[in-house]
Image (cartoon, rainbow over all chains, first blue to last red; front, side, top):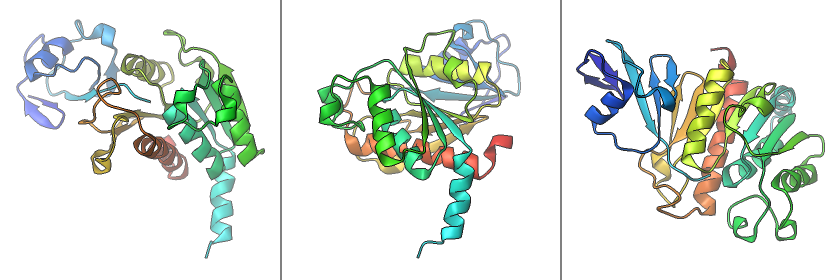
Length: 65
Length: 201
């Protein structure tokens, strides 16, 4: 199992950040993704594999400042 | 009654603190002024833009400053409030790959950028290149009302002032009350980080 934004979610072997975002139905164009203690750069979403028992935070960013 | 001793103790601590602010629009200009009033010793201000008439509905500039570079106009406004605040202005556009450069030596970094993509790139770069440096960021500034939806989300050294339901500035409008509220939320987080010793966590 992994935890995504506080929810328990089944862990899938070899699933990347991109895959997890799709599975969770997160379609926000711009997000900050943190896996355990590390913020995963956007450029690594398609390669970074989420390990079992991870704690994942997905934060949606919108424009305005 | 104001406890003068307590006030001096707090201001004494803040006097030794430096804060870097990326972007001097609605978030950055209001946060900078608030931090200057609070007594922060040094502000490092970064923006490439000039003051425009349509900024005046929410940004901390005045009509006679239209056409001036924001770094210069804001430094001027801070000097008018408290000339003892040291202001270091960088009139430049933050370039990917070098975004952390102006902020190497500050105690706390404040993300006050406009575009969501640039926000994300900035957050990624600061967290990876300046590990251990507290970063205050914000998302969800647009619109009005719904103040109670704003939360602080802490992810390691990232303190995100956040409303997950807020529209983007493309979908809604940017108006003074909510912009100033979140700018001051960011400034208030800076004080909390510095004064409560969250730096050493």
